[in-house]
Amino acid sequence: MKTAFKQTALASAFAAVALSTVLAGCSGKDAPPTAQTVDQGNGAASARVGATAAANEPVRPVRTLVAGAAPLAEATSLPGEVRARHEQRLGFRVGGKLARRAVEVGDAVKPGQLLAELDAQDVVPAIHAAAAQVEVARADVTLQQAELKRVLELRERGFVGAAQLDRQQAATDAAVARLRAAESQLANAQNARAFQSLRADRAGVVVGLDAEVGTVVAAGQPVVRIAQSGEREIVVAVPERAVGTLRQAQGFAAVVDALPGKVYALALRELAPAADPASRTYAARFSVKAPDEALRLGMSATVTLQFGRAAAIVVPVSALYTRDAKPRVWVVDGAESSNATVRLVEVTLGETTAEGVVIREGLKPGDRVVTAGANLLLPGQRVRVLEAATAGEPKATQATQATQ
Image (tube, rainbow, N blue to C red; front, side, top):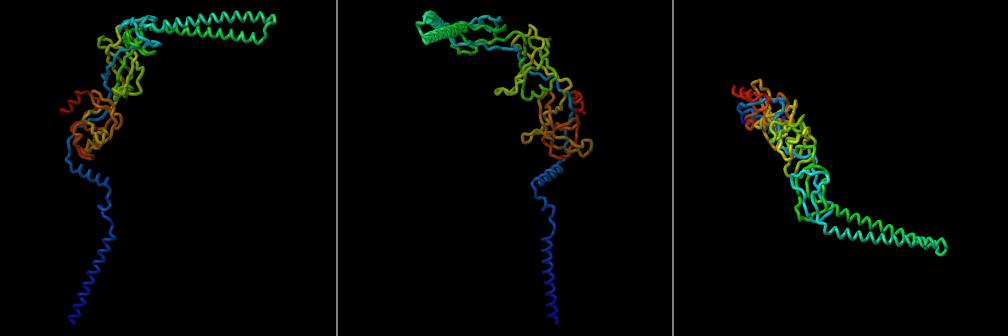
């Protein structure tokens, strides 16, 4: 009896254990996934890690600046050189050996003045040959016209036919045409002789000589450079970053180092559409509105850009945080509260000024930008603002706030 009872109890225990094992297996298979199972994306995991790292970082003190639309500095200037509005590169219309040069650099010239001459050794024989051909053609014309007159008289008497008259008329016309061709060749030879002399078209100043006496020059090769009298302009090489500033300017003025106390008003006449491949700068030409005799060619000048009410957001270079070749800045959110945090904002840079770097896109007036400690921050990290200057304030005010 006792043995049967023990066997029954032991069987019940085994059954209970088996049932619990089955239930455990079923519950493990049908249980809903945990949060760790769901979060398998690398981006989400990285964001969670970054947020956790930022949260674990201590509150970092930072210096900030409140971005504002400040007027661009009036001292923005570019070096330039005084040049003539029109500059000619004169050359001979025919090739030859340069025999004489009648001007030097700096000489003032008048219209029609002789500048240089070629050796006429090869041209004179050609003129004589062309003149001889003209005489031959003229004699032939005289002979053919006399023959035509005799044929006409014989035709009136009925001694010759119409065909012979037509042939003589054609021969006479051909002789006249040959005479005209010979005269044209003579004119070309004489023009070539005249083209041996290079003369000025307009009044101006010789600013360069590109060939020496004895040089064999080709037709059209520059020999003398002349800056025409009259209008003056200032040529400036504009850096790439200053092109945007140049287009925003409302006026231009120039001072010349050799003429202290004089200021010349300018007008932008031309801005090159493409940069110079060697210097990577854009050539800009400014017309001088009221030039005087004191403004001489080649003088060094400084062009000042006048902006008037033009304004831009300028931040110091220390505020920039570059990652993946993309400039960014740290912007503080909630600076008035005790839970101020930072976030990265991608910006578009403009030209460099005396105050810092112009921000074209990405910031708006009123944004609080970190200016010191940018390389030690993480997105979402809590910060403590030490002070906040405003872009465009006088430097003395900013220095006072920094001291406080």
